[in-house]
Every structure is written in structure tokens, then in C-alpha cells.
Length: 124
Image 1 (cartoon, rainbow, N blue to C red):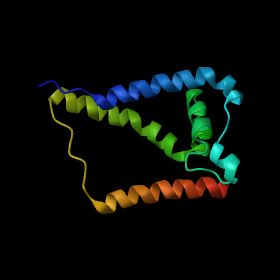
Image 2: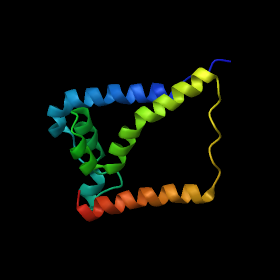
Image 3: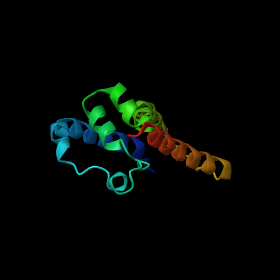
Image 4: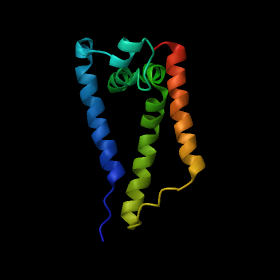
């Protein structure tokens, strides 16, 4: 059975998207902004994400890290994930099962809540 490197395909699609974002960055002022922040005055959980994508598309990693740290770290780790996925597909190995740990799921939610708290505290 042939194994499809889905992570590699996702990384390539994200790379193309970032390239497009870099090309469209001069038109970023036309974007409407965060409706949640406009309505409540508080940054939403993804405030800064668009600006981070635009900065990554232009190769400005420090600015991307400022606007949304999790995205910049995820983008930095994407090549390693792609290499792992290519190796997995080449060997014909299946994807490992996702962990069913309640603590891990809770940790992910805490991470997301922490990112949101950071965005609110910084006033982004």
C-alpha cells in the first residue's frame, strides 16, 4: 500500500500560501481587522496571526515571532516535520496513533489560553 506524505503536502501548501501572503502584503491595509477586538476592545485568541503570516511571507521572522509566536515556531518546525513524513512514507510506515492522553489535550488548551493571555497582555 502506498503511503501519502500528507504533512509534506501541507507544508508545501503552507509555503505557497506564505509566498502569496508576501506578495499581497502591500495590500494588507485593505483587510478589515479583528471584529472581536473592534467589538470588545480585547484581543481575540488569533489577534496578530494575519500580521504574522504577512511577516513570514516577507521573510521577517523576528516580526512574525512578535505578532504571533506560535505560528513562527510552527513554521520553524515544519521542515523537520516534512522530513519525518518523507521518511515515514518512504519506509511505508503508517502514521502513529494520536495520543489519547487527557493531560496532553489539557496541555494544548493551556498553551492556546496562554497565547491568548499573552496577546491580551501585550495589547495586540
